[in-house]
Image (cartoon, rainbow, N blue to C red; front, top):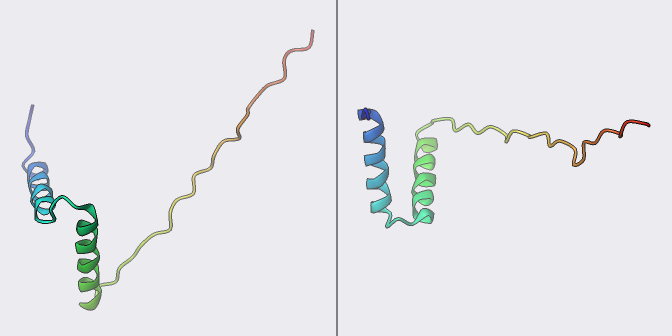
Length: 68
């Protein structure tokens, strides 16, 4: 199987970051929020998009049985 050096680098950086945070997701997100605040303080505009609405199909889609 081919290896992709960019993907390998992404995996390496993610693993390193997780190890630095003690594999604690709350710590990882706290660091992410700190990074976002740092960028905002530097004048970067932080953009977030509203969640996409998913149209759910109706619960029952039934056809009438053929009339005899």
